[in-house]
Amino acid sequence: MPWNSAFDDPSSYRRRVRADAPARRVVVGETDLWITADSVPIDAAAALAARIREEISLLGTRFPPFLASLAPVDVPPGIRVAPAAEAMLLSARTAGVGPMAAVAGTIAEEVCRELARSGRDVIVENGGDVYIVSAAARIVAIYAGKSPFSMRLGIRLAAAQLPCAVCTSSGRIGPSLSFGRADAAVVVSRSGALADAAATALGNRIQGAGDVAAAAQWAAALPGVIGAVAVAGDAMAVQGALELVELEA
Image 1 (tube, helix red, strand yellow):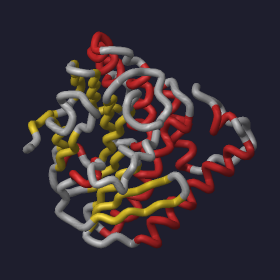
Image 2 (cartoon, one colour):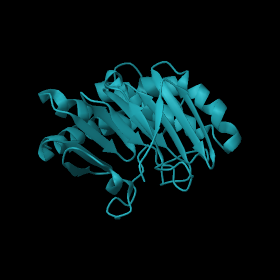
Image 3 (cartoon, rainbow, N blue to C red):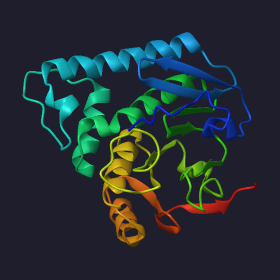
Image 4 (cartoon, rainbow, N blue to C red):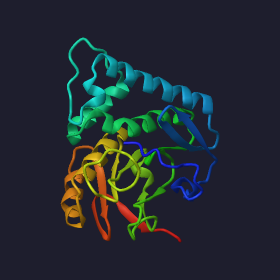
C-alpha cells in the first residue's frame, strides 16, 4: 500500500538514497513515483501510470468490491480485467488480502519494466514499494521508523535475483492501512503485485516483537516470494533467500 509520506521534507527517506543515475519525481493522482535511470522520460512514465490507474478505476466502477474489499475477490464473468488488475487479483488471493493492497507494487513494476525496455537500468519507487531492473547487484535500505535497525541494514540483491520488487508495509509509519504494529514488513518477489500484497499481509500479522519470527516465516513460504523481513521495535526476523548487509552511517 502507498505511504504518501512528506516527500518534500529534506529528512524524507528519498533524500537518503545513494544512486548512480539521476532521479526524477512523477506524480499522477495519489501515485507518487521516484524514478532513477540514466534518462527519465517524464511524460511517458506519467502517461503509463495514468493508464494503469484508469484501468483500475474502471474495473472498480464496474465491480466496486475490487476497490473496497479487504479480502480476495473474484470478478464476475463478462467484466474485462486488464493485466495489471489481474496481477492484483491473483496476488491478493495468494496473500489473503484485498486487491488494492497490491496497487503500489503493481504500478511500480509496470512503469519500471516499460522504461527498461530500451535496455537501461531503472529503479521505480512508489511510496515505499520498489521495483528494480538492473544488470548489477543493488542494495535496498530497510526503513523502519524509530526501530534501531532502521537505515542501518539493507537487503543486497544479486544480479541473478533481478528484476524484482522490494515492498514494505508498516503499522507505525505513514497512513497506509495496516491491522498490525510492525515498524517494517518487507517482502521481496519477482512480482511487484505479490510483494506488495504479501508485505501488507505480513504487517497485519505483527502486533509486537513476539510475532516477527512466525510472521516472516509465513510470508517467505508464500509461492513466488523470495524472502521476507519483519521488524518490530528491537526485534527482527529474516526468512528466505535474502542477504542482509550493514549500511554506512
